[in-house]
Image 1: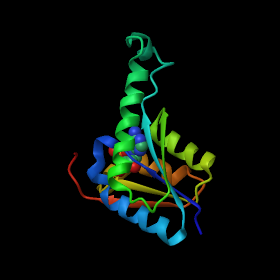
Image 2: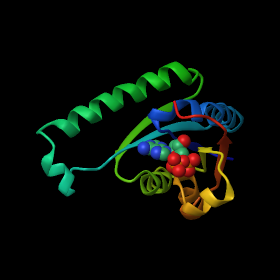
Image 3: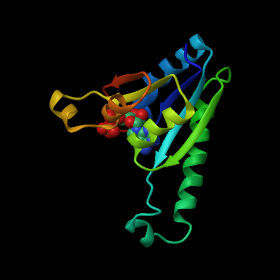
Length: 147
Ligand code: ADP
């Protein structure tokens, strides 16, 4: 049913993603789908903050995160799953929604913190993705402390 599945991942919180990762792998196997693992890094380049960063800082950060993302995939995604790493800069929820559309994924599997109703009303990445994505979104809630 799904040819492509998108798993957005915050590499600073990989414990949160453990359950979602298992589910995404399972869904890939069931659907013979490919898995796109997406990490979004801050997009300072065109903002005022960017002008204060030393030359080459953004490039170095991209290279480091890209290497970390490859390591994460290598370590956590079995070889029978066709996987791709996607690294984009910008605001996480916006980029996840846009990537889902551009890649034409059939499903987004997003790990999320368990929260109280009050906190949910404040909004979060998962909430924004559920609200605005043009495809089904599976939210995998996990009770975990930050990595
Ligand atoms: P928060 O309110 O901290 O965003 P949520 O529980 O709504 O928490 O969503 C967390 C999830 O959002 C992460 O597990 C990840 O899937 C996604 N996410 C957050 N930041 C990023 C990022 N920089 N790159 C990719 N995905 C991200």
